Length: 149
Image (cartoon, rainbow, N blue to C red; front, side, top):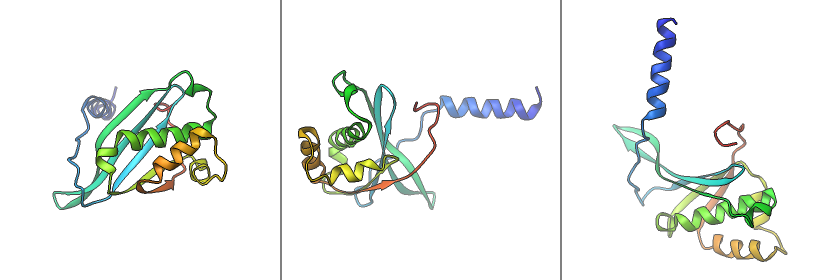
């Protein structure tokens, strides 16, 4: 192996084994929530941009995840994404109540499903709960990575 390859391998190993620096929440600034879906689990991360060493840095505040329940496994893809959003807001309620935040997702159906005229009983309950927050939903199209699939 060449020196460059060894150096690249060592830097990759160091990046994978080090824990990310978690930031303390600053309730004066908006939060960002990233929601993730995989085949058998769901997760979310709460981020915020803060000034560190005179530079704006986006960093994580916390990470949450859980396994999908057997009854939830029968949901369609769009309904599953809305479940993820509802679950993430419920779990991160302490940080988000009364604060401005942005939800970042790659599912375009979330916006339309939250504005449905005749939702099913699950969707209706989730719609009511989500409307209590002061957040916006931003759709970001991204390629799937191997870790989330």
